[in-house]
Amino acid sequence: MNFFVIGVNHKTAPVGVRERFAIPEARLSEATRQLAEYPGIEEALIVSTCNRVEMIARSKNGDCDLRDFLRKYYRFESNEFEKHLYEHKGLAAIRHVFRVASSLDSMVVGEPQILGQVKEAYAVARAVGSVDSQLDALMTRAFAVAKKVRNETAVASNSVSVASVAVELAQKIFGSLAGKSVYLVGAGKMQELAARHLIAHGAGKIYVANRTYERSVALAGKFEGEAIPFERLYDSVDRADIIISSTGAPHAIFRKEHGERFLQKRRNRPMFFIDMAVPRDIDPGLNDLDGIFVYDMDDLQQVVSSHLGDRRREAARAEDLVEVEVVKFRQRLQTLDVVPTIVSLQEHLETVRQAEIDRVRGRLGTLSPEQEIAIEALTRGIINKIMHTPITTLKSAARDPEATTVIDLVRRIFNLRDVRKAEADAASGAQASPAPIGASAPDETGSCVTEKKSHG
Image (cartoon, rainbow, N blue to C red; front, side, top):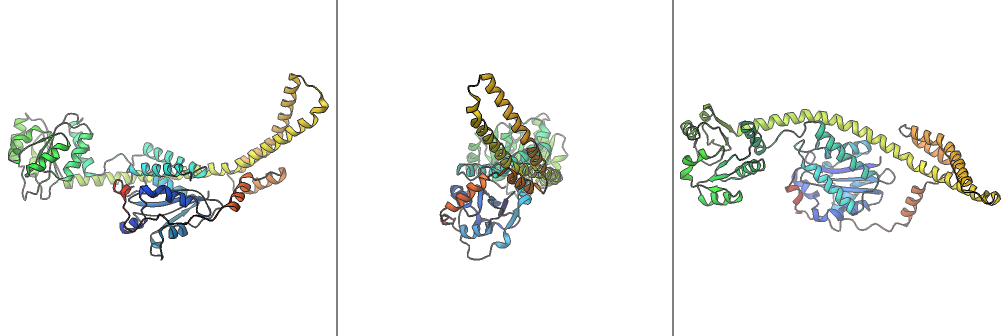
């Protein structure tokens, strides 16, 4: 379990510091390759988003200096960023990777973007050949754990943005949003975002009325909607089922008498008003009318906050689930530790078996097919009986602290050669001087393209 994690995230570093660590997508492959080639590191990948930059690595011999890699890669001349770094080793590193992939370490717990970002980092690492065995197993398991957390808890089930809450409330009022028309009063970003969410959930035609008609035309054009002159507002709002209002008016533009008129023209079909303006565009008295539902920013924010509370409670369940998975993964890795010895033992005894058959074959003369089969079965049976006890012992010891002692004992008894270690030693001895670090380090004003489109 020679896993290591080092990095900065939204909890340990302000955005000004995270910008210094950000690695643009175009440089991620080269940065990952440099990390994997750093002395002592066997496998590596890098996750770089708006809210975190993390180096995840597996060492060759249980130790590696990731802080030194950071100093050289980023060309830091002082320890000014040391206080912002966090570092995990062994089980803590495994637990951290599981939590990140499961969105339990995100700024908004349960948000779905981080899993996709970790998968992108994994894909980059695979493309440059920097993940192979145990790190590959760790990341694959992390994706499975993230899926399990989402399926078995409600950590991601409730909306946590004003726009998504607006959609959720509209669905509660109307059931399906299919074909429901939306009226945007004003042409701001919040209205546009809410409209996009509503359309994504099946809403139909979009109307836009803004005091500047050209802006109405521009926004309506984004949704293939209809721009309406602001002076026709009161004569046209009744066309819509959902009204999203956010103007700069200093007083309410929709009052109770307007609502009564709208309902009369709509024959009491319900209307849902979302008031995103401060001061409010909609008189709270409108909410007293049967068939009209008004939610202002405080109402929407309360729903968002309540959902965050739900997520926090579910996150506690998810943390327990992650802990169980960490233990399972540790046990699996410990089992993997004995596999090379079992394989070596099988190969060694098979070599002995074949050599003995070849040695006596000349004295046996010509053998019939039946006799060949009998000798094969006899010798294989003997080998299997010899292997049974040591293999059983190795598997039983895999989860115990004395596993290493048992592995060494079996290797000594059967004089088994550690092929992997020999290959690693040979490769280490033949390794050329490492490539210069930081040749492509991002400049201090490096952009954060990936971060701006996500918040993992």
